[in-house]
Image (tube, rainbow, N blue to C red):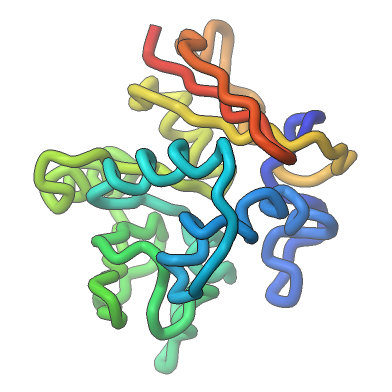
Length: 204
């Protein structure tokens, strides 16, 4: 998240999925060995962010995301649907549940990632993800709209925000129109690292 509260920049499209300037939200992560390894890349840096990322990834057994985070677009998927931003071997390596209004058969990828497309709401996606996670955490990864739905429904037990010292000026906000008193979370930890501050919150 940028200092001014955006988790993606403006003008998101197929060529700039994170919006104008949005890729800089992740500049701190790209050099890390802990980030590179799940993406099939070798080497990388180790710094104060390393244990944060390693511990986070080790706990996740399933992910929930919105259609925009999977691959964008609107309307029916069509006869030859696009397989999204993530390539043949996505970095998740566990089940992923995609929130959508349009049915689609599951997509099985290399490396253990399976995308299941859920059309009956956030609660259904969460319950399916809990079963698939087999006792590990479910990560409502995003994007912003999907995250807001879970926050608004008070279904988030823990939140980790990677706060990046940049200003985007416009784009997608996570904390938007959540209603009075939301999110009901308490700050429990802060880790300062090069190019980012990791903030951890738990259900109040």
